[in-house]
Length: 186
Length: 342
Ligand code: SF4
Ligand code: SF4
Ligand code: SF4
Image (cartoon, rainbow over all chains, first blue to last red; front, side, top):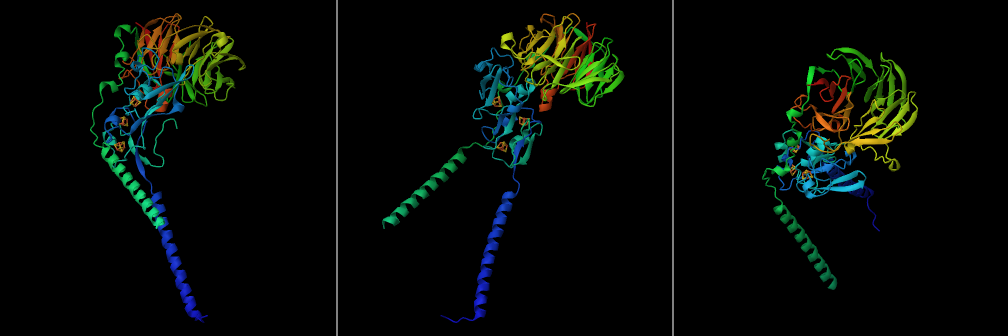
């Protein structure tokens, strides 16, 4: 048993407590810095469908060989038409899935029967090159439910988007990465 | 010793997996083409409708008479003409009545956006205000008002005879038949296999009807590209029409969007997409063109809509008077042009 000076004991306790306060403060500061960094808004490129005229540049000007822009479908706006002008060439021989009747040059749109006389149209993004041909057909005669969007599962978020530079209608803009799509019918 | 060897082996395995992952990442990055070569799209990627949109001038049988009437509406929804040739335009929250030379005769305030309009036999008006029907006398004073039976109704056209008021509901794809007091006394156009009625298909909110002097209701079935005739009890008597971008057909997913009856029983039709107003005889045979893009002041023969609003709510409406003159309301430009047979 040692008979220690109570003054020494309280100094050691003070140093020990101070050490832990300093460590915890440093940790809190680091955590706050990380959180603040995480909370700092990140922006990504997106195209505004209300401004897009489906000029074709989205297919050809992306830095990726296969454009990050794809056709997307606002189902809530779709008429589920038998004669879908985004799916069929202007004067189809028959309303069937024969290649000669399809508007999409890459066969990226799938037509599925729902119930008479309604059909659902879905985009196979692996085949879509973002040319906008179907978008034009749908906007000209239909409800405009087919439109283009930058798909963020593949977009590199270039510092300067090459399509934005080439876009004739200035449809490209930076949007919040937490909300990266500008959807029609919302 | 055994334990140390086990630890060494698993360490080696982790290192190996890490090296593999890094190598895969590097290869994937090197393989991804980010050169952006800008190869132009081939002709197969062009949406070309021009060959169908052009109208042979020999087919144009009408010419515009008088000046174009430029209205001061922000939104227009319907046009009608009365027996004296006065032009009624419904839009914003009012009806404006014009003389044939474009002077405003009177304005009738409605208190809500009108969606359709018909001239009543007694000189009054019947207006659709989304889900509500309002009857007005000739000076424009409300005489009756009632709601459509379904709360989500969107009334896009009204037709009437001595005993009935018919209202086309684009949301519920049905024509409500009311008596003159507003009681529902029937439905027309609803799918009914037993009565051989295929049902109305309405991809976008255009659904036009007119009562013909023969007592049959003429109904556009836009998604089927048909004009149909129904008895007031709802029996489907006959139909005509075909889908085609060719001049004789109705283009796109759903056309015609609006139509009017001519004194000889023929039809005047308006389409969305292609800018063309055409005439068919009473049996549905194509007769000729009233106006195309040139006559209606459109540079482009194809009106591509660029916003959802443009895609679903803008086009042309048409009316005809007892002399066969045709009145075309351009809902985008908010003007009215009058055409006469050459
Ligand atoms: S470049 Fe602009 S206008 Fe052309 S398709 Fe892309 S977003 Fe639309
Ligand atoms: S037409 Fe063009 S934009 Fe539309 S689905 Fe096919 S490739 Fe994609
Ligand atoms: S940011 Fe880069 S990768 Fe993304 S769409 Fe634009 S050019 Fe393509």
